[in-house]
Image 1 (cartoon, one colour):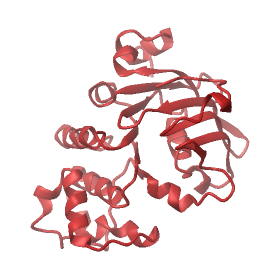
Image 2 (spheres, rainbow, N blue to C red):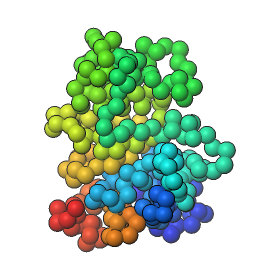
Image 3 (cartoon, one colour):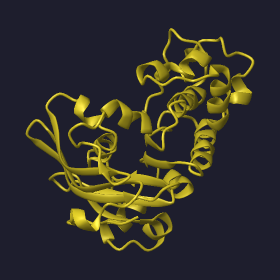
Image 4 (cartoon, helix red, strand yellow):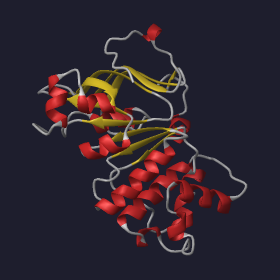
Length: 267
């Protein structure tokens, strides 16, 4: 994990996912300024910081979800396998297939059963599969949900508990076989038991994919993430204060503001 504000494009061009000098605006509001960050492959990176500092905005920039927001704009580069995902001619649907996203509020499709929810994104992304049943089982297994729902795949997705619905949404994202998974506060509405199961799923998934997660829960960041990136706004655009190994962020941060935040003195 490197915090490289001001890094030139020539120094960049590594594998995996990274940003180089990214900014974000909503109309005239400058929401995020000059963030350069690299996400090592097969790791979990926690994005931490007070509300309003640009964490979720930054997350949406990573797979072009930002451009769905009216009057939103961005500058800088988001590099995936060395190529800018915002370059002309890049297919945003393909980018969102390879860089999946799970939102804060679980959102299974109410008119679909559990099995149908898992493969709902295949048609939109124009992805074909030879064995849908096998794919459903594989994705639910990887999401830590198969044993709980295998006997009721025809039940509505909305009939599941909150934690199960969130893992169903993770399974739905996994069906597209992404290389990166973005999670926007995936446990914020869950009870401790459900949170633990989702966290176990995240750790297991990070063995085979890169995960970037926004969280306000410092204990969760310490438990789950390999790296942390600390954002602040301080009356202006959100910006990256520092990024490092999670153990360093919590035990020996380089910036006093980081220490104050992780120790609960503000935010």
